[in-house]
Amino acid sequence: MLIAANWKLYKTQAETRTFCAEFQPPGGVDVVVCPPFTSLAAAVEGGLTVFAQNVHWADEGAFTGEISVPMLKELGVAGSLVGHSERRQLFGETDEGTARRAEHALAASLRVIACVGETEQEREAGETEAVLARQVAPLPRHPDLVIAYEPVWAIGTGKTATPEIAQEAHAYIKSLIDAPVLYGGSVKPDNAAELLSQPAVDGALVGGASLDPDSFGAICRAAAP
Ligand code: PEP
Image (spheres, helix red, strand yellow):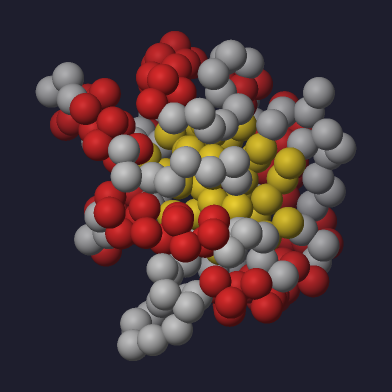
């Protein structure tokens, strides 16, 4: 099981050091944290497995605001998220751009978690499978690629997908691509075990509940063998 913490635009370096001092990952679970860029080094120094929240497809160049694979690898970062719904919805990132980011990072031996998921409107219009198929299609096929199914209507809203909805979407994604699939969307200590017990759920991507070492620890323990 892989449990990933997406800290979004939270945690300074000092706050990251405090988290690392308090958080004890359980054995038998692949635990990673995705801090903002300025806190990556502090998290690596704190002994955690660290992913970035995004990575660019060029190693260097005129790409203001981006970060490259060599920059991340120099810090000891092990992988990156790509295509988070906040990147897609708020910053205009596309399926093709997400795939290029994933491809470049994987080729350079970084692990990648590529996020996919439908909006509430798309689900209500019966378009969930079409959206997932469109988002998964351009992604590279690679042993270090993990998919995160994050229904946009469940992110940061407190509305968790039922275990049945998660299972159905994960099984569909697995019919499209041979990769582990994490569930993301309001995962909390009290719903983690049930979601993680679904056969097609291979772990979780956790936003809000990953900021506190106790609640993130409880979610990680729910994934322990
Ligand atoms: C996320 O941002 O990836 C996420 C799943 O957030 P939350 O757990 O807060 O819904």
